[in-house]
Amino acid sequence: MWWYSIIDKCHNDIDGSVLPLFLGSIIYNKRREMNLTQIELANDICTQNTISKIEKHNTAPTVNILIKICTRLDLTLNDVFSDFSGKSSANEESLLDVIERDVLLKNIEGIDTKLSELEGKLTNNDKKQYELITGVMDYWNNNYDASLFTMDKVLQLTKSNKSDIYTFLSDLFKGLNYLGQGHTDRAQYYFQMIVDSVDSDSKVTNANDLEILFICKTLANSFNEMRLHDQSYRISRWGLNYACEKHVSYFLDELNYAAAIAVENNADKEQEYQGYSNLAYYLAKAGNNQALLNVIGTK
Image 1 (cartoon, rainbow, N blue to C red):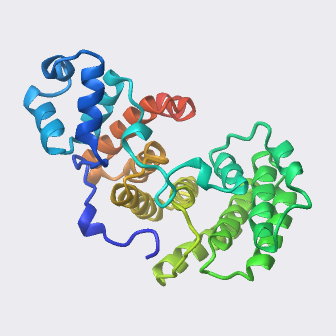
Image 2 (cartoon, rainbow, N blue to C red):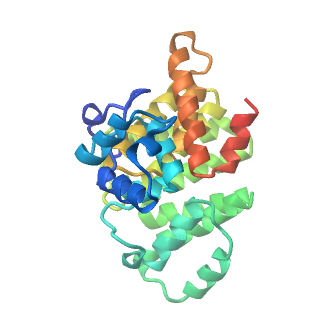
């Protein structure tokens, strides 16, 4: 599976831990900067010995403890996770990459202006990404028919090649558009195409971590909406294990919440539900994801 390759190396159970790169030195330096002792940092979070093990041996705490430590030290999850594997800084990204990232994160203010500045300056290879971004913007604005038309243009440009991430993203947004129009059977068809491609071990060479985790969390949420909870649980687990293996933090709150909803009514998984639900809350709070916190607050 192209986004979920070595689950046994990164088992993500409820009390499992996530090992950020250089975690010990980050926490040590920030604690000293804030003039806190290990005991002061550990107060009401964990033991002083736990802090010592993290700082001296880079021992990873559970996610619950990590979030509380980050909150006390005024660290974001992005401070302790590397968010773009293979890209050390935003300067190495193309403008289209930056725009795509913002659009997938739904940071869409000013995007139309940025896109208009690119007109006439695109290479043939850029066009599929440009059209994908345009189609996503139409979707966010509830222009479903326009978005479907644009996603078909992207598929023409990729020739529906299953080794191209823009094929997967186009299929994903076609499914979302049909779901938005109430055509759940059509939506399920496109979502299942993505799952089938994953199961057939399709190799995608031009995907980044954000795109992969966006697909995971979107599929998981959509399957839950369609009451296909087994599918949602499976996909959310793929995403959580991928994030753990790659040490990235995109959509961890939403993936945990999707996993929680998927097992909410399963009496045999009550403990799992509580674990995923608690993690979703703590992660959403740490990441200031107010939209998710509002959803969780209604449960």
